[in-house]
Image (cartoon, rainbow, N blue to C red; front, side, top):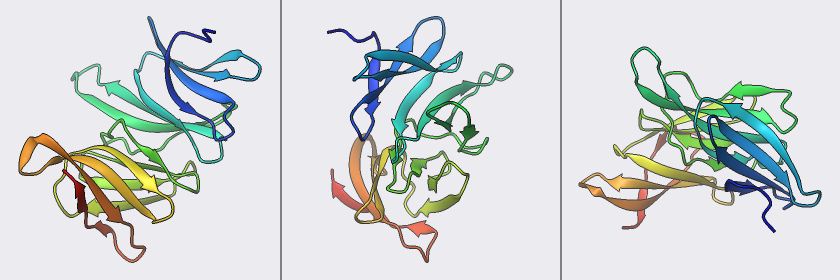
Amino acid sequence: TMASPGVVQDITNSGNNLILFTFGTTYNIDTYNTETMQFSSFVNSDKKALSALYDTFDTGIYYAEKLVDPITGSVGSQIIWSDVNQNTTRVISLPEENVIQHFGIGDSGQVVYANNNNQIILSDSDGNRQVFKVLNNFNILAIDYINAEKGVVFIATDPQNEERTNLYYAKIDDDSAELAATLIAE
């Protein structure tokens, strides 16, 4: 049975709610309850949503949205969190960051993302942030958090050949703000 037009982005840990993107004259992030078959509008904006994920506890949704400066035309993106009842919305990334659209969720409700400064950020919906500098100059394309290892895995372009991508792993050390990445697969 067709539930709704759109592209599925994520499903809650309980398995009963979906995040959907629908596009028209505006960009929408919608939710769909699979038990009640109810469709709800979550975000309706002129800013293009790039990706969205439920937080660990299904209490909110992190989403990346594309920004276009109306004066200069420069393009950027930011990470936003909004609780599922839409009572609280917070911009998670800093204004000068241009975040990648493919981010991950940590085990304590945090979001992990990379920015244009070769940094990996672990942040929560309250604004608590840990910033890690990646030692190699990677162009990170997608990232996720590994709960059991307290580390990150990411896809980045090969520093020697920009047309190739590799999979890397970096363990997060509480005593260091630097991450040394290990090549997992070419």
